[in-house]
Image (tube, rainbow, N blue to C red; front, top):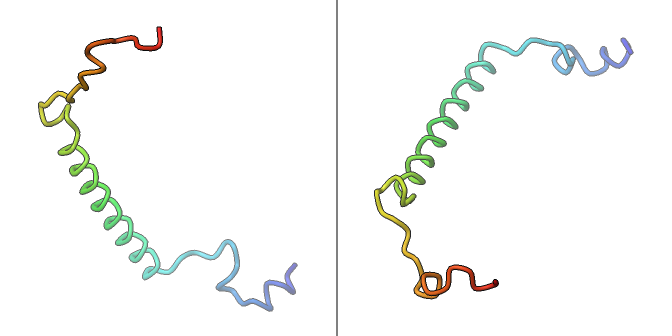
Length: 70
């Protein structure tokens, strides 16, 4: 096991701590992803009829027979 560790160097060891730059990169990517998610959620809210105050339009066929299978 220790021979394998020496062959690949300390940077590939499973328990090595990330560098400061890696942590900054991860943090920035996370903030970017959260911002993008919030934008998508806002767009979805604007398209959702319940959030816009509009009720969905019902087809005439649905209104005429509420239970067409039965």
